Structure formats: C-alpha cells, structure tokens
Length: 601
Image (cartoon, rainbow, N blue to C red):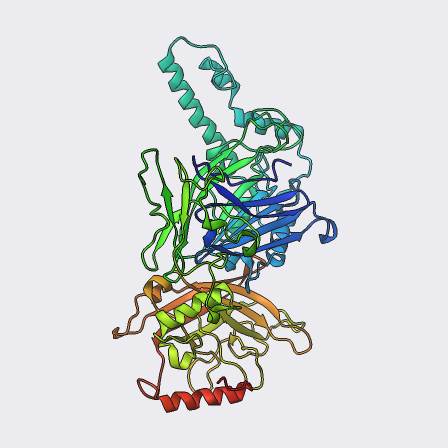
C-alpha cells in the first residue's frame, strides 16, 4: 500500500547504504538504511509495534517503529496508520496515545521523551473540516459527518482549483499550463507565477481547518511535535483518483492525510530540507510523501569517529568527511539513514572498502572506512580481558569514569570517591498530577534517569542497584518533596562528568510513579529536563550553576501535570579534600559487607 510505505529518501551520488533494520505490522513498514561510513557508529537497535485495530489486536491500524543510537544521539522512527473517516478525530487521538503507551524501545520512559530525535510519519488520516459552519460555543461542537455531502466536496475541490470565471478572464485553462498559448511568453510566465501563488494561498486557507493541527495546538495528540507546512509544499494527498496527477474523488473532502512530524529534544536541532508529494504515482487513493530532515548528531570524546577516503581518478583524496570528524565532545549536523539488526550481524563489514562493488581495490568514487580506536561493539577487533562481557555503554561510561570524571585507571568506581560534582535539588513540586487510585488521589514518587548520572548505591542485602528516586508522598496530586535536612526526600545525584561539551547535550529524565501496595506501581507522567545551563559550571565558579524551570509531564503523549524543579550543580561534600588509602579501603570494605559480595583478591 503505497500511502503507508512512506520512506525517507536521500540520494547522494556515489554513496553506499546498508539496510540495518526493518520492521512491519500488517501492511505498515519501516526500513532503515545507514550510509556505509556511519553504520559502524550505530548501536542499540530496537523494534516495537502496537496494534490499534479491532479489539486493539487487528493490525490494520497501529504503529511500528525502529530506534537506534548513532554515536551518542538516539533516534527513533515510527510509521503509523490511524483511524479513518472525517468524524473519527477523537479515535485518531486515542490511537496516537495507544501507540505511545505501547511502543517501548528498551527505554525507561515513553518514546516521546526517550529520544533526542523522534520522527513520526504515515497515513495519519486527519481530515480538513473546510466548509463546515463554525461552532458558536465549545459546549456545542460542530457536527462532522462521516460521509460529507457531495455538494460540499465539490465546492472544496473547486476551491482548490480556483474560480473558473477568474481564470477565464486571464485566458488560462483550469489546469495550469494546459490552456492555449497567448503568444506572449513573458506575460504567460507572469500569469503562471501569479496563479501558482494563488493556488498556494487557496491550499493554505483550506489547511487552516486541518484536524491534526488543531489537535496539536490543544494537546490532544502530537503535543510538542513540529512539521513543515504541507499546504505550501504540495496539494492534498487524499482522496485522489488512481491515476497520475491530483484528480480528486468526490466521495471524500480533499485532505493532507499523509504527514511527517518530528519531535526534537532541547539542545538539538532538526531542519526540514525537503517536502513533496509524488503526484506521478497513481496506484492508490493517496499520494506518497517524501521528506528530508537534517538531524543534529553528537559524538562525545570517548566514541569512535570515522573518516571518508574518496579517491579520484588522479589518485588524490579530494576531501575528508569533516561532518563526521569532530573535535573532543563536538557536535555536528548531517543527513543520515538508519538500519536495524543486531551488532553481530555485521561483524567485519567495516574492515574492508565499501563501494559500489565488492572490489578491495580503491578506485574512483569509492569510500573507504578508516577505523580509529577504541573499536565499536560491532567491530571484530579483540578487546582486553577487562572489557569482556560488557555492553557498549558499560565500556563507554567506564571510560568517562576513568578519564573524564575521576582520573582513575580502575574499571570500578564509587560515586562518593570518584565523582566530584552532584545535582542537588533545592525545590521539587508536582502540580495537577493524574489521579490513579480509587480515592481520586495518587501516591507519587519520582524516579530519575540520565546518561551522565552515577549508578545509585545498592541497598543492604540486595545485589540489585536501586534507582535514584524520591520518597513517596501519600494521597496528594500537588506534592512537595522535602529537599533539605537529614530527612530529605530527594537524593543528591552524583554526575559521571561535568565536561561542558558533554553536559551541554545531556538531559535528566523523570518518571513519576504511583506507589501501590498490592499491585505493580503505575506510571502517571514522564518528563525531560535539559541540563545545558549547567554546562558552564567549573571548579572555580563562585556561584553554583542552577536551573529553575517547569517540566511538563505527559502520559500516553498527553498532558499529565507538571513538575516545578529547582536544582544546582555543586561540589560533592567530603570529609577531606582527598581520602587516605586507609579510609578508602575501610569504606569499600563496609560497602562490600553490606552488599554481601566476597572480597576480590
């Protein structure tokens, strides 16, 4: 089904791509390709699906997604097919919420907060309510018929094509450029340009009644998402006749059903470079849509970088891929593709020349991937004994701990000994949280996550590390956690690094939970806080860097209250500026006895 298989297509002459991941649900597809020189930097591939059809089981409606991490930037693509018909706006909003609540990609928060870049596309089926009388009050919404009167549909089609009398006065046929030539090429060009501008204006006027735009503004669905203006880019993609060009069927109002939206975390950028509809495709009652996006990707200092080595006919190397060769902790922009599969599926593929053929001889327009150290998880390069059995992120952040955070050479670390800085909350309050219990209240507590957060200490007698979390406040939808004194309800969280190049791109994630005694705790909100304002903090600052803001919470992609957060970055308190060997040995022995682990000799 062409209108469901939306594809991000980027054509660069001479580039080679790998199919890294593909996922499907019913007739919905996601295929992710990665350019050859970027594929070694991709890891943490995940797939997820959620059916929203009949009985919430049938896969004729729903969503399918693929997520990946490129260097230190997480990206997710979701393709969805939502409920049809003009009068099903609320059902489409519910489908969106169900997909958000059901599609998890190995993250601890909802997909709308879990990634630096989330691209959502597909046949979203939102219609235009052009020609309907406006409601006089919010209590009496306007009536939307499932099968609109044909007269209203015809008026909508004529509105898109323009007034016949006005065009006749200019001697221009209704289909622009198809009428007889006036003999004056300059005047004809001016008329075409003027008519083109008027055609865009007519489409924009109809797009003002778009249901998806209204839902985004109200926060009913796709809150926080952005998109280009499809009315300025192309004609409505539905409901067209199965032939070339934009000829509309009179059974339904013309609408922009096929959309591409994106949500980008604060501190990152996403720019649209292309948006168009494929009018020459005539195999469906929709027109396929192509979109180009430029996503900002970040690679911190501990991650491998790659170079392009393109040899021209003279044997010289005309350029290097400066887009991917960053300074320490630098960030950069580039168009990318993605691909799914496990890391083991592609072992060794980066040890050879990648080009249009399998030849190992470098030639014109051949891209050579040059590896640097340390190796990536899908590289065949052997690792040291200390890295065996560790995941990529464990290796990555062990380097952060050793080189950036504490300057130690050992693999293990203790936050109280190794980390110099911590996040200290000066205020944490919840406002208008969701009621999850039968008594109309919730028993909320907050769990904190983040790439730069140190591992939480282990509870006595429990080998599993506990989470960074607050205490529980009973029966309160507007809780205020105590943040000072010996009985503080909010922990101080040590950071693995305060390197400005790293911290300026990191976030603190919140998951607000309702504690239950007899059943599993329920999530009642998710949020994300940008830590960039803390990046300027250093050892010599007279005033600690801080953040005072409101973090909007969502549940199933919809508004779910907010958190009022005030925090500062401060030096971790210590008894002395440096632990003696005896103190450090005694402290570790105490921790080891509490966890029940034997001493390593």
